Image 1 (tube, rainbow, N blue to C red):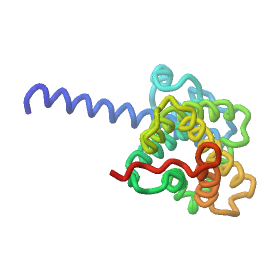
Image 2 (cartoon, rainbow, N blue to C red; image 1 turned 30 degrees about the horizontal axis):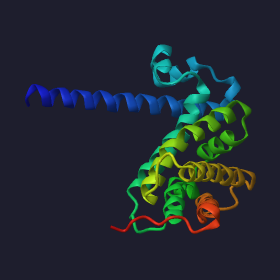
Image 3 (cartoon, helix red, strand yellow; image 1 turned 135 degrees about the vertical axis):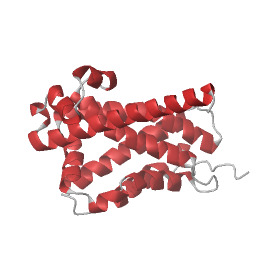
Image 4 (cartoon, one colour; image 1 turned 90 degrees about the vertical axis):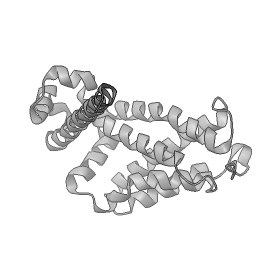
Length: 213
């Protein structure tokens, strides 16, 4: 292995370790918040769970609420990447509905802890601000991929409005699922909600189709 290859491998290993630490902190924050309530969790409690320092925590997150909300941010990021890889011939509304529903597909068999975590995100005043911030931050990347799919200008109004509407629809579906005490399918609710906002294009016309070439 030459020096360039070794450096690349080392950089890749460091990136994976950082990602693993970030995820471990987020999951520990979520578990503790479910057990104790968000207001009763200290940053030190989270770092003790992962066996890292407070300084390590602040390298990734500014507060415990941001750590918990990062789990939603990761979910949105995966959905955006999945949308990029959907068949170009597929109607945009269908692609959007499927990529976001897929992120909640496992919810049909959620364990109690994870189900409570989703409900906590929807109802906790301490987390609602971070959840909204996460949603806003996801709008730009989603709008960019929507513009690519429709052949439009990323600066146009339509992809940004649609991105904001889709993310709001996902949040609304999740809230509805929480209020129903999980009596309905979360993926189905997400799929239905996204279809409702993504179906029509500007001025009530069909949403632009992707260029099949």
